[in-house]
Image (cartoon, rainbow, N blue to C red; front, side, top):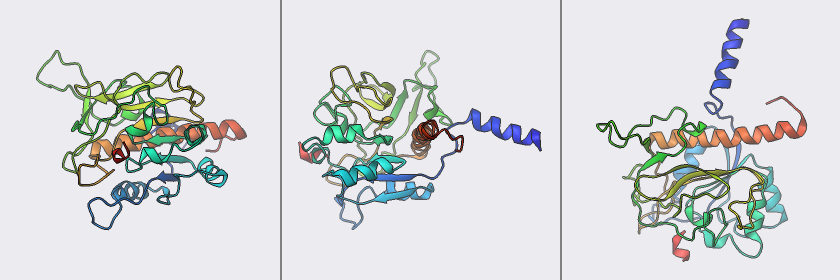
Length: 281
């Protein structure tokens, strides 16, 4: 029995993001139905999170005017996800940029438009693409835990000199087939984890709690922050439609586990317990 328990503990230590505990997740999103099917365009993301066993708080059109009560609710969640469907221009009124960035809860941003230096100031770029059909991501940091269980390969498997490590994350047949990316690969005081193939476009990145996003940004991460571009760009079809393929969904699963593991680590440290333009969108 002791040997079996030792093997189980060892396996968990070796695979820290393989298992994701159920979490209380707030999804920041809006009531948008551009394809007129009477379902919000990013409902696929919500359904996926629920199927993963998470408790998902979806109050559409609620978070674009923060007050003390809403901020307290955001800080009480295990994780915040900002959907690609959300319109970045609605979340910068008054002091809202600082309020969002100061939240202690880990936050996953799925929209490049929020990350720009004219919105939440995560990346020193004013560019977000709206015509990019990239489906392959290059692993800049292939040893990062978010790539655990993801099969990476050269872009050209027949070329022995091709040492790139890529993976297809997006299903091009979903919605417009277009994903928006931030127009930079310099993440300032953060770390670039993946970029698009053939373009200087950031796909996945992270920032530690307390970090200024980039020198001179004047904005600091109140908690763990990650950016992961997913969800379709509107081209007269749908906005923020869940467009990740099987590998992309596994990578997102790993991202959530990584963020939630960070949250659990912070909680344990605190209590000493060992228990575990507007059309852009």
